[in-house]
Amino acid sequence: MARPIVHDHLVQQRLLAVTADLVDRDGPARVTLRDVASAAETSTTAIYSLFGGKAQLLTAAIDDGFRSFGESQRAAAEGGLPNLGRAYRTWALEHPALYRLMFGGALASYVECSPTPDVASDSMLPLVEAVTSAQEAGRLRAGDPMVIAMAIWGQVHGLVSLELAQMNQPDTDWAAIYDAALDGVARAWAP
Image (cartoon, rainbow, N blue to C red; front, side, top):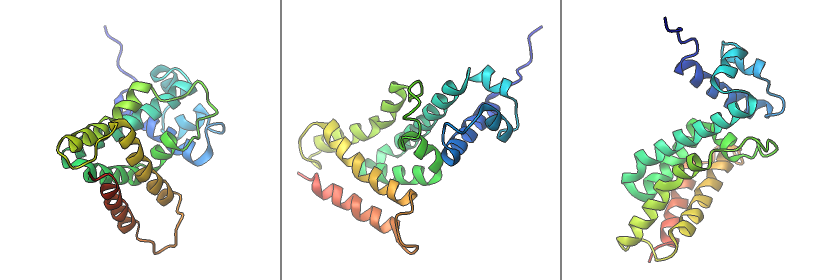
């Protein structure tokens, strides 16, 4: 007789979401597995069974963020660079805790905790592919697609990070700022 599955995919997803929220709020050093389990309405046994321990849980949370981000980028890729840029901002605003966990450096002190390289780099492939495609169509100047992609990423990443950090006046129109930046990026890299 097979053992019943005690910790299913829903528990796993709940643990990943709660982990991102708690690390975002309290910092990784202050978050305990007991805190995560309690907030996810499960047990520490579930964490050990599904992930192994704290470092593995944190790595899984980061990887889950990069997978979700990559899915949103792949879904937006058909619309080219402007669509990817808008999708970047939309995803970050919908997942602020994950965004900060992935890019905010909160886990830098956890040497054993970093994103799985292939998962993180795969999430950026749609941008590199869009740059290459735009170059081939003559809409973007020639150059190393990776260098251009990283320069574009830095621009959109910086604005989103400022918006999430609330570095603004209450009436700041971030959507207009972001659209102006996307227009500026397009003009800067035009042939």
